[in-house]
Image 1: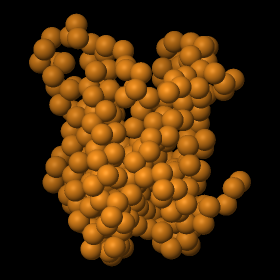
Image 2: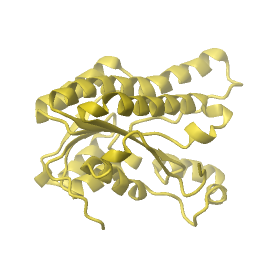
Image 3: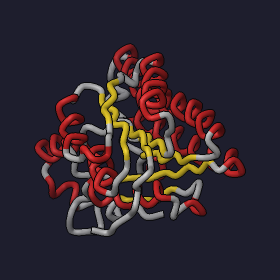
Image 4: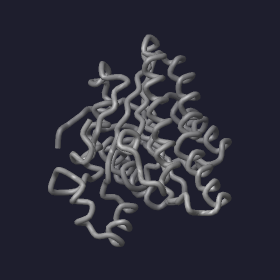
Length: 254
């Protein structure tokens, strides 16, 4: 394993109890980071993650990111516990289906829920993070986006695509606006990644359907994404601020 030293870094990561977030969090903990591990419902997985690395003094924090006040409380609780945050990784998100053939009320309910979690919470944590980073002479944001921003999504995932498009534009705007204040922002744009959510898709449609879309012989795993995020956290990629890095096994090449 490539060693990227994150000792002395305090990192808040949302949605860290499963999937891509868990993979990133586990790698960062191995590299010595102190983590604020956010979760919504899977407390057991979040606890198990930090208990593997007691020497880091990491902590878990619960919040429902669809609720504005809980997002604010999450940030304030992390600052109260750790005093300082060096990196905020905005990973949490939902991938909810809502076909345009659905009744309007049902369609719009999913739209609002998706935007609240995938974009509103990201905007709130960005605003609070900017203020925090200004007071401590800098920091880094890492946004987990999607290839959907660049190739589009299928019609039943319009809200998801829109939310990730907004996230990507936000990240770029933060990079342009606050670089002189030592604040950097990056985007990772994954494609189909082997997570718990992906397994349900594979069970329904078969793994071959996914493999036919990509250029490589195996699906992307969270462990393929984690080292890149850690490099961004370390400061060694600061001159790539504003960049979007595609990690999609060659399924969409720009």
